[in-house]
Amino acid sequence: MGRRHTFLLAAAAATLAALAGCTGGAAEGVPERRATSPTASPTPTPPPQLPRGGRTLFPAYRVVAHYGGSGGPSLGVLGRGAPDQAAAAIEKRAQAYAFAGRPVQPAMELITTVALDAPGPDGTYSSRGNPQAVERYLAAAKRHRMLLVLDFQPGRGDFLGQVRRFERFLREPEVGVALDPEWRMSAGQRPGQVIGSASAASINEVSAYLAALVEKHRLPEKLFVVHQFRPSMLPDRERIVARPGLATVFHADGNGPVTTKKESYARLDLPGAPFRVGFKVFLRADPVLMSPQAVMALRPQPDLVTYQ
Image 1 (tube, one colour):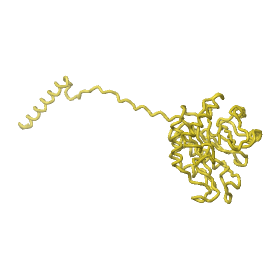
Image 2 (cartoon, rainbow, N blue to C red):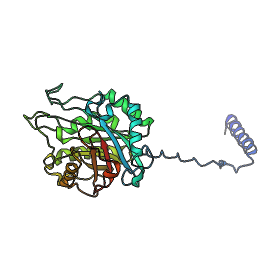
Image 3 (cartoon, helix red, strand yellow):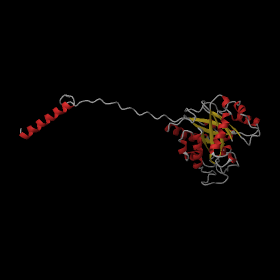
Image 4 (cartoon, rainbow, N blue to C red):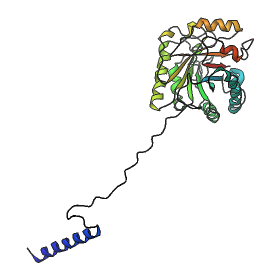
């Protein structure tokens, strides 16, 4: 062994001895084990809730809504005044149902696409909708802890195509969907000249799309409304399926005298659980307005009451 090699070995031994002394004399060749604190697991983000708490709409709540467009009251009461003014009116209306045994969840039902008597921008006899209007009403809904339901009138178009254009809003926990078969036209039909209809398949493809969004984004139960005032509007209604994550409501839209409205409601024979039922009061078209007490006396009792 050369001198240089011997010197290097001696220097290494001295270094090891010094390190052992600094560390309290750990055994030669065995690194000291230092105590470490366990790494805390990140707290999972809680899933979003409904505007007034919880993740299930029915039977936890009764929903009371105003319906209309953003361009003024001609399409319904929701268009009276600015969105915050509309919210104040809905809150007052909702309080009238406090007697009926459930907390009330107020809602805005905004006509998002409007059926037209002309081909319109894409030849479907329907507008494309105004995302800026949806943004305004959604901001007001958030401020007032309300639901916002986007209503679609597709003309000769299809429901799913219109609904998908508003997906960025549908990822919000407050936002639901309403489909209006009255304004779903077949080839050659024009809105306003005939009363439209929608197949169960067209309804089911929208509900499947919405249920997938609910699951993907861990959303609370989403309101899904299907409007009807004649049996012919939903010719194969029995084939419409209920989806997990959706509170599916068949909504009776008949107007007229109280007796006529009650007869129409009974004739529709709206399906029971797992589906829910809704009822509409027309502030102009009904010659006598049914009081909240009269509405709650209906059987089945409505889960959703809408004013237009």
